[in-house]
Length: 454
Image (tube, rainbow, N blue to C red; front, side, top):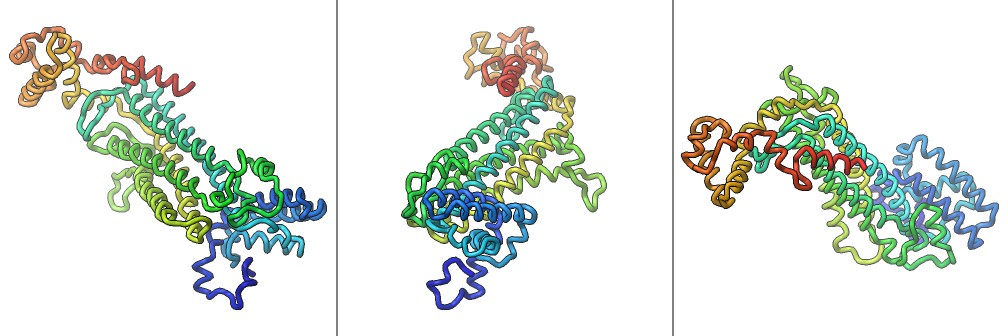
């Protein structure tokens, strides 16, 4: 029986029922709905709607229902009820009889679902936080393993300047730290309890909402009933956090796919995150990374859909808000799975230091060092930049790297160049020159590692 049937002379059309019912997806809130109901039973006892014995009976029934739900939550999805609240209430009535009908006193499905969803979101977001931390730890371990490995840095997918491979690892650690910080902020803001706000105007019973909030682990109760039942900012924020973090993971995937390619050969992914071809026996495809890159789009889609759903809704609750759940139910587990896959990729990766070093030495990546050398010879940087460009042209014409030009060839373009130029052009010198905070020199990278681990 629907929770609202008294006003209607006939039941809903079957097509409308299927269109309207949310149990096929909001069954995932069963534990949160029961936990919230247990807390509400205690609140009703405080205002003498339920006697002490009645409250104990209701809580006992809800506790038994919670244990049953934990065994096979997916079976609830096909039980034919309108939503998870209808299911829990009906099953409670089966256990405790007519007493179960008293539980909804002073409560609306509007504040009920808002509370359930915040409980689920907080719990799942904390799982994401741990997954982010685990991936960060794996990056730090890889950075420590490859501390001396030199990698070509890129801009515009063109070789630019050499960097330490560890510096590349720590760039993603910085992204993960921001992801974690954003998520922590979102968790803090969602950690307010709407229960006791009623349908929109607040409950008519003198419920101690702050005590109720504390019992459910919230920081405090919401301050405005209209906002409390219609606010889905926490969904938008979590989807935004997920989208930004998935964008970072997608960039990581793209980097590693490129580094893993036959054209680069910088890394080799482990067998447990790759697959083969049904036709070509030699293939070892970076499927885990490609799936991370692909799943980023579906998370972005959930974020965009939520924004579109909310953009024109009047206060307070509207049925449109039923669309808030499926996107987040998909996006957060997708985010967690992608973080775990990225961790597996980083954990098992093998770095080909010889290939990365050879590539870092190519592409005239030491051209900036040569320009800085000219600055030390009292040549303005802009003029030095032009001179080095001419030298690069000469090196390309001869099929050489810059450091392979003879002193006479250097001096034919810039007489101020002397023999001391050659040590400055060595790859190690290019790395060690970056001593400022945040640079790729070994001392700075070591400091960054220590800071990250502290």
